[in-house]
Image (cartoon, rainbow, N blue to C red; front, side, top):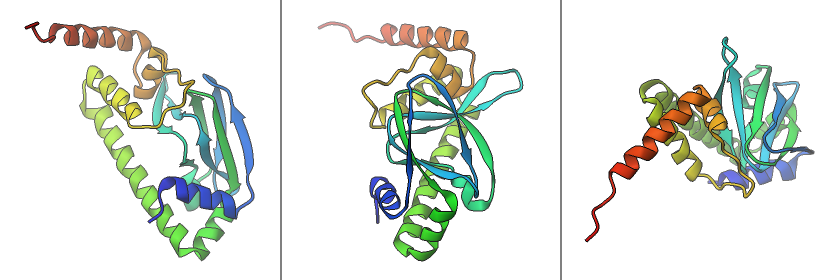
Length: 193
């Protein structure tokens, strides 16, 4: 079975692609869909966002190196998605139609795409559970733990505002909750021997 890195590299080696360099701590719009592109993050960390009716943003995915955005194009859905770069990022993009044709003709890559989609679905379900069942402090801790499982870029910048966007909370609430977490951790120090 191909790793995510091998899968992404094989896609890029087999198809013509273009490169997009994104600056750190900026908002960007990417177009997904059958007439648009599949986007592969080759460097950096990107967070996809949705905007709420009250103007707040809610993160709905973290994408580091060797991750793919735009899978909705496989089932015919066109979307413009707002992203926020937590670091400088490099994305390569390939026309969705070419990716579909390649997957229809390459069993190994098609299987790798299925596995990748299943892993992504599992991660989304875990994040949905965290967003709906956990307290604010637990959501912050869950987000920070998810970052620690990733291969993070050197210029990563995760401010309380970024955390607020990621979990869909107000930055002031995040600041207060992180202070409570810090205070709780200092309360549980082991006594000196």
